Image 1: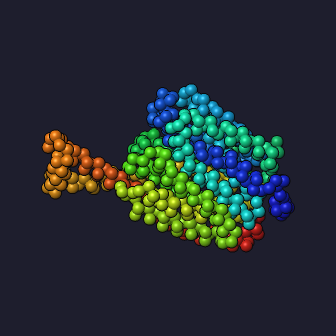
Image 2: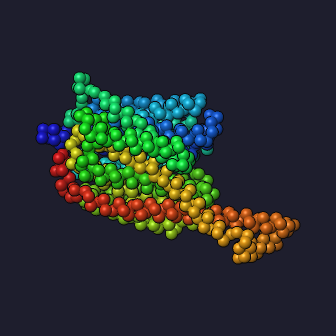
Image 3: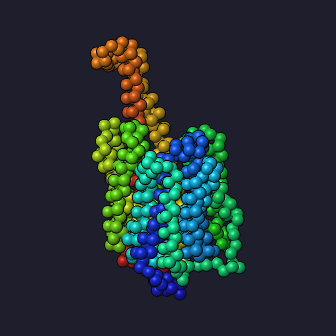
Length: 530
């Protein structure tokens, strides 16, 4: 009880909103790096004399290191202190960004990306935990609206910004732009952020490293992230490498959960999942990561690959959806103080499933820039209704000294969801495109009379339109146009299937909203410390 009283009485020396903006700045810088390098991979590979396949390890190396650090941030802050750990992460992330920018070879860049991912792994959970502590429970929703802008908007802006920098300057600047932001964030955090008195710190004699748990975490997460990143590329379980990764991930992560459950001083506090609010909310954050990143990838890819848009123009479509969040996020933050969280989440999942269903009706080979923008807006609008209440609900019923562990695991779940979303969307596109091509080509064989008649009519039209071209050339052109039409239609249908499956998954998440125990905003203050 004394600890709870201390948590309720403590107030930061600086304005909580100033602290929130400063820590959000550091988090935004890190989240941006999860997607900013995607479009620059061909330039990076070419500049360093590496193949395209080797270049993809630039993303994988970052994601693996990032995901390993996320769930252990609670333990690290207990050893180092939250502020000191936050400053170390900013310093490591900024310094490794310099190394990335000046890397002379692919191995050097991969090493720098591992260090960057490790440093970045602490920035998101620390920013979220700091916001949770400097704001009273009744106002956390408004604070997490600001955090939501970094977690959702930054990945959406990353490809657009990365493409613009790469096209106009050099791929090295997508890393070097972190340096001034990191230096400013480092100075501001040093001055205005402080550790609350109720945070648990190990005394020097109490520090004990859980080597077995850390080894299981490292092996399991590395295998899982590599599996998600390389699965579709290597044809999933048809590859012995991917199959081995799948077995390794399942065995290591299962062992991790069992080991940490009974470990007296776990490096990952898996016992938090005993709290229904926490387990339900983190499940929602995982699915939000899946849908958010899948939708962020799908539409720009469709516009570029199928419709022939430039990267910059396709990025503007995504940016329109992200810009909408700048308006809606603060409003949703206020709504969390007035309406039960589970009702806001239910509204979000309902709107998201409806938006994805609408997307299936609007995607076609005749899609316009305006229609594509509408699709992104109806998909992005509901995300705030899910993300902010879910993040807020993670802390309900959890002791204040556990906030670092809560934020670390919550961000880990969302990050894994983002990787899964990218992998899932690419797998659906590849498999469903093959299915639709097979179906569409059933009636395009040379033995089909209707197909031959249609081909001859098209060839005759092309022969009349192109004076001087022979009939054989006209027939070849007619077949080529038919082939392009079939491929384009099959691709469009595969994107429709992807949106439909994401919509079904979102609709199923509605039932999880009713698992939340705390649903009255008037009682948030009471439940927060129990």
